[in-house]
Amino acid sequence: MNFDVAIIGSGLAGLSVALNLADTRRVVILAKRSVSDGASDWAQGGIAAVLDSGDSTDNHFDDTLVAGAGLCDAAATRFIVENGRAAIEWLIEQGVPFTKDVSAELGFHLTREGGHSHRRVIHAADATGHAVVSTLNERVRNHPNITVLEDHHAIDLITSEHLGLPGHRCHGLYALDISTGRTITIEAPHTVLATGGAGKVYLYTTNPDTATGDGIAMAWRAGCRVSNMEFIQFHPTCLFHPYAKSFLISEAVRGEGGILRLPDGTRFMPAHDERAELAPRDIVARAIDFEIKKRGIDCVYLDISHQPEAFLQEHFPTILARCREFGIDITKEPIPVVPAAHYTCGGVVTDLAGRTDRAGLYAVGETSCTGLHGANRLASNSLLECLVIGRAAAQAMETEGYVTSAHEPLPAWDESRVSDPDEEVVVAHNWDELRRLMWNYVGIVRTDKRLARAQHRIALLRDEIHEYYANFKVSRDLLELRNLVDVASMIVESACSRRESRGLHFSRDWPETLPKALPTVLTPPVVRRRES
Image 1 (cartoon, rainbow, N blue to C red):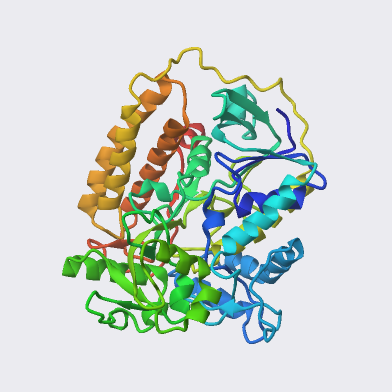
Image 2: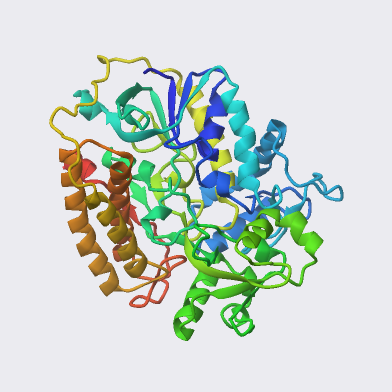
C-alpha cells in the first residue's frame, strides 16, 4: 500500500496532522482499534489557551515553566502557548461544540485548573476530548484523500537499514490487520507516530487499553533518541471503585472548588502545599499517596457536594452520571479517589515541527517530547500540544514536498521461520508481572533499591518476551507487551540516571533538587553501534 503520509494513531494529534494535510496529500490513518478508542476521546477537562484579555501568553508561559520544575524547553513552551489561540479558533471553525458563556470575550466558558493562574481552559462540559475527536472524526471520514484503517496494529518501522540503503530515513511500516491476521506493508515518504502514551505499563492507570507506548518503542527500535521517560504523571483523582475501570475525576472538579478530605472529613491539602487542591498534579498525587500509606486507608475523598446540583449537571454531567452508576451521588456525598498513572511527559525527541532523528519520521502528541512538559505537565496543555505541533508537522511535510521512492518495492513481512504460539499464557503472565512490578517499584515515590529490583526483573522479562516474539506469529497482545517492556526499560533507566528529585520523579535516596535542570536523553543501541 502506498500513501504520501502514514499516520499511526487516531487521537487528536493524528487527526490534526491528517486534516491539515489532506487537501494536498493522500493520507492513511492506522487505528489499532476503533478510531475513537484512545486517550484523546477520554479527555475531560479541556484545552489551555490564552483567550481572554485579562490573561496573557506570558502568564501561560510562566505557569507552564513553574509546573515543569525548571525542565521545560523555553523555546518550545513559548511557541506552543503563542499559537494556542489560533489552534482553538481552528477547532471552533471545525464545529467543536465548546461550552458557551455569552459574558466571555470569545463567547465560551473558561475554567481554571491546578497550576494555572487564570481561567484559560476552554471545554465542552466535562467531555471535551469526546467532543473534539468526534467532530474531527466526522471530517476525516468524509474526506476523499484520507483512508482510515481500523483494527490495524503497527509492528515496526521500515528504515534505510532494512533496505540496505544509505542514509537514515524511514520509508514506511509493517502493520498487523487484526481482522484477518495478515501483515501488510505500507510505504510512505512521511510517517507520523501519534500513538499516545504508555500508561498501561502501570497496574493502575486512567488510560485506555490502547496506551501501550507503541510509537515510543518503535521509534527507539528505529534508532531515535528518547527523553525524560522518568517523568510519569500520576493523576491524583481516579475513581476508586472495583468496577470503575480507568475512570478519572477531572482536574476541573478541584478547579471549581472540590475539596480533598480524609475518611473522617478532615481536609488535608493545605498541610502539604499553600495552593491546596489547586497545586500541580505531582504535589497533589504525592500528598494523597502519603496520606493513604501513612493512615493505611484505601482512598481519600473529593468533595464537590457544596456546589448546587444544577451547577454540577451543567459542568460535570459525565462525572455525575458515571458516579451514579456506581451508587455515588456527588451532589450529596464525596467521591472516593486514588492516584493512577495518567500521562507520559517524556517521549521521542522532536523539534518544533515534530521531526525525529530519522528523516521522514515525525512524532506528535504524547508520543513525543518537545520539551513543553518538562518534569511535570501543566493541566490541559497536552491537547494544545497535539494541535500546535500537529499543524507545524503538516506544514513541514508540505515544505519538504513529496519524496519519490529511490528503491525497489518494500519487502513483504517474513514469517516463514515462526509458528503459531503454543502457550499464550506466557504473554498474559508477563503482562501482569510487568505492570505490577512497575507499580510497586517505579511508582509515585521511588528508591534506588526499588529501581534496581525493577531493572533486574525487566531485563529478564525482556529476554523472555523477545524470544517469544522471535519464534511465534505476532498478535495484538504480544505486540503491545513487546512495546511495554521496551518502554518500561526506558522509564527505569531514566529514573536510575536522575540523581535528584524533580517534578514527577521523587526519590527518597535523592530528595534534593539540583541547581541546574538537565533532560535525561537516552540513545538507542542501534545509534550507538552506528556512531562507533
